[in-house]
Amino acid sequence: MKLFSIVSASLGLLALVKSLPVNDTAIIDACAKCGSISCLISKMSVRDKITQKMMPDIRNWRPGSCTSPQIDVTQIIPEIDAYLQKYKWGGLILFAQNVVDTGLTAALTDQLQKSNAQTNKIPLLISTDQEGGLVTRLGHGTMFPGNMAMCATRDLDNTQKAATIMAQELKAVGINVQFGPVSDVNINPQNPVIGVRSFSDDPNLVSANAPVYAKAVQEQGTISCAKHFPGHGDTATDSHFGLPRVDKTLAQWEAQDMPPFLADINAGIDMVMTAHIQYPNLDPTLVVSQKTGESLYLPATLSKVILNDILRVQLGFNGVIITDAMNMLGIVQEFGQTEAVGLSFKAGVDIVLMPAPVVCVDQESQLDDIINSVLGMIDSGDYTVQELDESVARILNLKKKYGLLQLDNTPVDQKVSNAVAFVNNANSKAIEKQMSNDAMTLLKNDASRGIPFVTDSSSKVLVFVTDATQVAAINMIVKDLGINVPVTAFSYGSAVYGPTHKAMIDGATHIIIGSQVTLNNPAIDGNGDIIQDTTSGTWAFSFPQAVVAEVNSQNKPLSVLSMRNPYDAANFPTAPSILCLYGVKGIVNGVYGMPNLPSAISTVFGYSKPKGILPVNVPALNGTILYPRGFGLTL
Picture 1 (tube, helix red, strand yellow):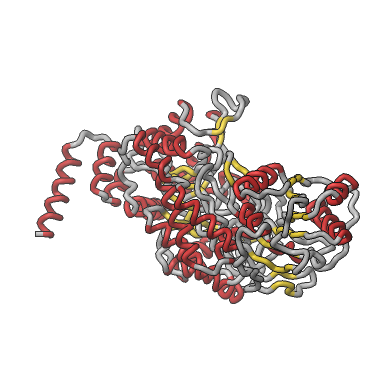
Picture 2: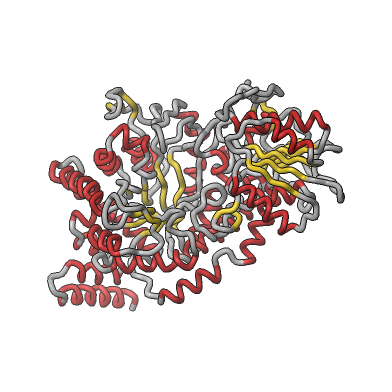
């Protein structure tokens, strides 16, 4: 009976296709309805296959001309409507500028899919970076405290819950690809781009958390993407601005960076994002830089050895490979925009993310150049139709797995109301708050001058933070917690410590100083010396040091908040109290951009207790471990 049904269905599809007029769009629609990938590919033009492999952004647009004022795209406009219908993209990536409001986002994704469907019967992959913590896009989503904070709780249930809720919220607003988990092992404390986005500097901890995150996302019907292969955790250069190089041996890579990606693959991850990083001991191929004319190693994004021989053959990954953004300077400056996309195709990439920075109609020619270049590669045999078809098949099979070969015809009003009701609901916020509170990690605490602060009617609390959004968050959390003593928050970003700031300390009874450092490499690292700086260039280091010295001289209660990467805790050996919170965002779009700062204030004032332990080693400049991974005090 089952065989008869299959044969009947196949004959029915064949009859339907034969009965249709000679119209590729109609045939593709029929193929999509039955889910036949080979049918779809056989009826797609070569050009449409190429654009199926591209995922541009529509973060901003200049309507009318390239000199018009730039707008954030929160709803479709005629030029973008025409743009989507012209190119038949395989997907789009959305950024914070696109997803400020939950209802508008649900409406926007509906508009994008319907616009695409006018000429392309294969729905779009719509993606974003909702990692949690520092990198989140949804304006009113549940943000969570971030990967390193979740790891500080040492509770995999927290990772599972956070990933589940974020995936559900993305799906609710029509986003079907989550660019997470970050599976990089943050081995280098001077890493300028990963830091708290990583779970840990320990491959075992990352390997435990990342696949839990990925599986939770995929169980909600959202595609999960592990990044950034073969590992961005041991770099000292941000690939947005340069091309990092990692010189570790193959054995070191296999021991340190590979395990989380292998764990993701073994857990069934559907997508892996590449890194624009040179790994000479993984692929020693030398090429010539267009920028300098000097030799450099082929970065992972453009390396067939790394993407095919290692990722696919050695690690057994059969899913979709997507590049990191191809408009990053690290790749564009060295290889050229058009050439880089062609090289990525040849390397085995399935989807090119952000192939060109297009924000107006006249700039669309950049995309035409890229498409024509790939067509030329096919004509010359430099890239084959077989390679193209195999790549497109991986993309379409992924769409089929997640029900994305058919347009979701749920009425848009219903999509919007469902999204508004679900995203950032009270239950999700309660889970987020508890998780963030539990992540707070206390590294040092003096019995008389530490936390929790003991206050009375005469107390005056002074809080130094680095920007106005954090000031707003302090003011809001003081109100939310019902703190009944005066609390004054001040932004010291780019300031040089001076008499005005001393006077503020003189007038306070309790002081909180937030330290926000990305690269923790000042001369003061690991000792008590203060840079007497007369410029604002090193304010992030010198200002907090000066505050600690002054408060110590007055013997007042003081809490240092390590607000971003916990490595700056090494800068404060004389501070009476140090609390790591792993997150810096203040108020964004009228809400807490991250729960971490509110949790820190709650901890300092005794409304919650720190339970976290360090996910990383915190070294001094000389390499001595001041606070080891796993360390954390309790109250």
